[in-house]
Length: 220
Image 1: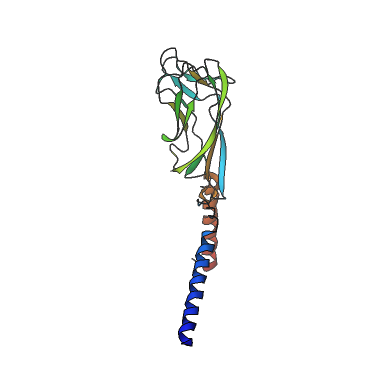
Image 2: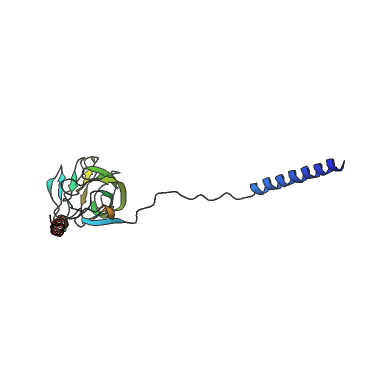
């Protein structure tokens, strides 16, 4: 009889403990969630190169081709396929993985029209900029920001940045012109640096000299 009473008491205590545990668990506030993302390499290098800038080539299918004059701008652009191209930048790397922009343009768009420009590195589209309706005011506006992308190898010995207009603005809808003085950042990993040709020559000379020294020492 005592054994049955003891077992009953233990069962009651156990059920009470479980009930308290459930109540306590339900009383916790939801935990905040951490954001999981990839670590940014600490060894990234950004080379600042001039683009768009004086001397860069451009094509306006309405106004013709030319180069940006010092302190000036391209002709007005509003037709799909219009472009501005940099010179080829030779960088000590075999792979560029990012681009940043600090570009100015004169905005004469109006009537609800915008222009979408693609940014290309060696012919590969990596970003886009949408230039807004400015009510035909001709304000000087700025494009800025940065993007990351899969590595792009050099072409023709380096890297060329190009802006290409994707849409045509109807007649009377306005236009834009890119200004001299833009700065573009091209990002790559420092551990992916390729020795410059001069360094390779010095390295080759050192190897040849070392080989001759070894021959003399071992009597070859």
